[in-house]
Length: 163
Image (cartoon, rainbow, N blue to C red; front, side, top):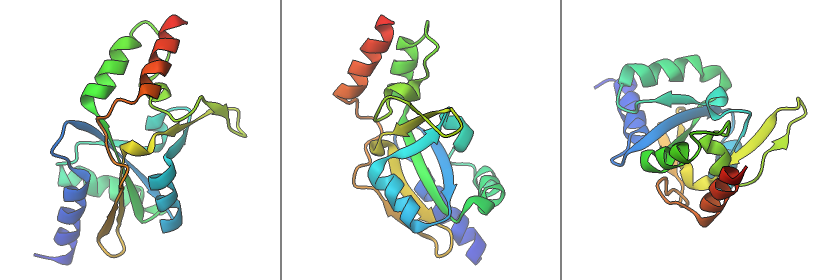
C-alpha cells in the first residue's frame, strides 16, 4: 500500500461513521484554530453550506477531491457530523418557516459580522474532531455526540414555531 492510499484510507475512516449522520468538512490553517473549533463550536457566516462541504464519507474519490480543492485553506480538516434524525426532526418543525435547521442547533442567536451577514456557532457536540493531513493523525473531540437533542435546541425550535 502506498503512503497516499494509507492517507486516503485513514482520512476516510475518520470522516465516516457507523451512525446515521450528515458529514461536513471544513479546512483551516492552524492546529490552534482546529482545537478552538473542537472546544468552542464552529462559527460560520450566513449558511453552513457556504463554508463546509457535505460529503458521503465513504467515497474516496470525493474525499480526495475536496481535500485537494480545499488544500489552500489549510491542512487541518474539521469533521462535522449532524445526526440525520435530529436534522430531519428540526427541518420538519421548520417546514413553514424561512429558518434553517442550523439556527436551532447553534449555540447562540445569530449576530452580525463586519460584512452584515449573520454569524452562527454550531454546537461543539457536532464536531467529531480534526484530521491533520501533514502527518495522518486525527484528534477526536470529547464533546462529540451528534445525535443528542439538547433542551436549548427544543426551546429554540418552539420559539421559532411561534413566530
